Every structure is written in C-alpha cells, then in structure tokens.
Length: 126
Ligand SMILES: C[S@@+](CC[C@H](N)C(=O)[O-])C[C@H]1O[C@@H](n2cnc3c(N)ncnc32)[C@H](O)[C@@H]1O
Image (tube, rainbow, N blue to C red):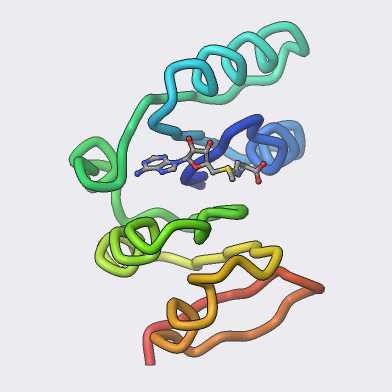
C-alpha cells in the first residue's frame, strides 16, 4: 500500500505492523526523516520516500497500488487539484480521511464516496 502526505505516518506504521508492504511518502524532508527513524526505532519494516504530488514518477512506476491512503490532505486548494489528477493514476482502493477541511467538499463531489467511519471515506471514480 501507499500513503500520501504521511507526516508522522501512523496509518503506515499500523499497516506495516499488521503485515502490509508499505511505502509512506511526503514531500517534507523532516517528515520523511522522522518517520524513517520512528519505524527503525520500533523495528517496523516500511519504506519511506520523499515524493511530491506534482512529480509523482516514483509512485507511478509502482502502480497500480492495491491500497492508497491519505489523511488530512485537503487543506489547500492546490492539494485538492493535484490529488484529483494523481489519485486516478495510482489505481487500487483509495481511502481518504478528512477532518472537514475547506477544500474537501468540492474534492469529494468528483468521486463516488462511501463513508467507512467518521471522517474516513472510500473513493471511486463515478
Ligand atoms: C496536515 S498534514 C497531515 C499529515 C498526516 N497525514 C496526518 O494526518 O497527521 C499534510 C501532509 O501532507 C504533506 N504534503 C502537502 N503537500 C504535499 C505535496 N504536494 N506532496 C507531498 N506531500 C505533501 C505535508 O508535508 C504534510 O505532512
């Protein structure tokens, strides 16, 4: 599975602990370094890579992903625009968690959305 904008990467760490093969990504060097160190410190096997959504070649090379996760990514308009372009190219199941960010509403309108839990949505192209 792939996590976009992982930050601290709790979904990635949890999935890896439960046996998933995980690539966690973020564009922030600090986030990548911290998540790598955290995984190592806890003996959790996962890959962590610095990737930005407007330069997604490393992600496309490994597509289709079985599962793509992202949490709290829709806080800027450009994020929503870049993810609308990128997500359909990654394949697989898409699950996005969102706490009610301003750009989430118009983003979700572009998808068939199934609510999996409070603030957690599975997306399919209509
Ligand atoms: C609000 S934080 C959420 C972090 C984590 N998913 C969470 O829920 O705690 C958004 C994350 O997306 C990353 N991000 C924002 N724009 C990005 C982009 N264009 N490419 C890759 N990562 C990006 C940020 O660096 C940040 O770690």
